Image (cartoon, rainbow, N blue to C red; front, side, top):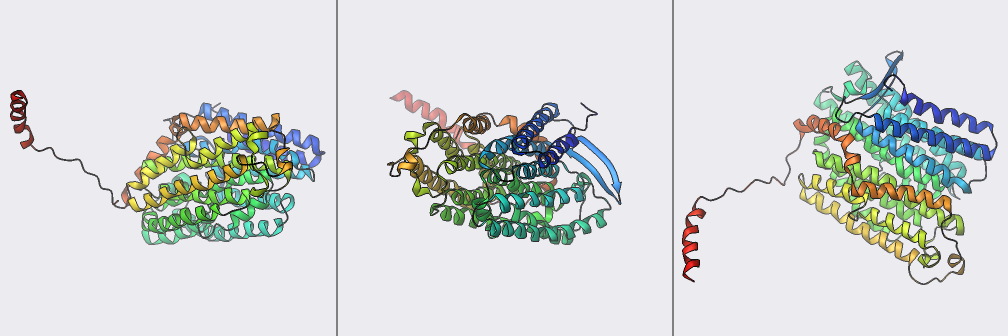
Amino acid sequence: MADFPILSAMLLVPLVAAVACLLVEAKAARTIALVATLIDFALGVLLWANYDIGGAQWQFVEKVPLFAGFSWALGIDGIALMLIMLSVFLMPICILASNSIDKRVGEYMAAFLLMETLMIGVFAAQDLFLFYIMFEAGLIPMYLIIGIWGGADRIYASYKFFLYTLLGSVLMLIAMLWMVNEAGTTDIPTLMAYDFPVEAQKLLWLAFFASFAVKMPMWPVHTWLPDAHVQAPTAGSVILAGVLLKMGGYGFIRFSLPMFPEASAHFAWLVFVLSMIAVVVTSLIALIQHDMKKLIAYSSVAHMAIVTVGLFAFNVQGLEGTMIVMLSHGLVAGALFLCVGVIYDRLHTREISRYGGLSINMPKYALFFMLFTMASVGLPGTSGFVGEFLALVGIYQVSSLVALVAGTGIILGAGYMLYLYRRICFGEQKNADAAAMPDLDRREFWMLGAIGAVVLWMGVYPESFIAPMRADIAALDARLARARPAGDAELTAGKPQAAAHSHEPAAAQHEGAH
């Protein structure tokens, strides 16, 4: 196993399959795509099984120098491992969810497989420019998926998605060129330990922030996300919510925090303010949505705001919580979009008012939908609770005000998610066509069941997911320690009073007198 280039294999399998999908007819393309994604999932499981917890920080390292300091360098730590696992787990489900696609099927499958290659590449890249290429190239298949197979306003949504995410990244490229010139290397692990001058850090941090904030997305550059989600096909929404939004968070963990710790501490207030606004504003906007996809898209922005506050808490709890929220949100938001896709395929509308009372004729569906609704709210026993609890504990140590406002996100989240669930699954069956919809078929049951099982596993036993990341998060925390801002919750242990002991005998005599 030691000599097998498993990461390159994981990039190669979907890439070869993508080319194959372009050359065959629709049915064969579906089969090829499903088999390729399942092979990648099997390789991912092998990766996790062979990952040495507590061993070297960077494992499965591959390095081939190419030209001008640029090299094909891959390697993962625990954080990257978990995000790669999320990507390879969701991908076969996306392929299964694409049954309703009937035009240009081969190209559609090729776009998804290329997407998978680039997503794994982002998390495994150890060369700065290799990361940038993978990070930016991920825009292209997503742009095509929304623009070709999307809804009525797909052209507008795909342009908006592309331009928003591209603009931020130009600044990041300029910053990267300066960093390579300054440090004399493109190696990400070396750059993570390099101390850039504090004044330069601030400009570099802002340049990276411009890119990652749009990817997350943070308020006020979030407006592309609801449009992209509404227009994207179901599988496109799953992968957009499940993995693409996590690239922003991964960027913060991999670049902004370890490379520019002083600047991160300097701008932490900016992140807190934007995140607090995001939690409240987007949750209130979600409450009044009529379109199911839009509602879940706004809830994603609110959940990502908890990620950003946790990241800048500068402590282990905040960072661990953030990672679990990212993994949990990837699964739960992906599953909620699948739930929307299931009923959209039957009735071809996303209007909430067209449904109602689905628990009568679709009990299995209503059960899964309830599980994912509860996980989104953060019910104990589901994946959502663990992450949000840890992130809020982390942020409370820094600022009780930010913790309070971020906590309202959970209350408002419960409001709009339960309201959505009530309107779709309970109440009267006013529409005969909705009342006649059949329950989940076998394919849909297995898609939702697989995600449901992992959501409960993460909620009941989060240690399996935290253990691989623990050492990397501790290393990042140690790197950030020098810049850690003073928190407002400086708790100190009380001092026992010596005088208290002298009253005890008297008290005992008093008792005896009774």
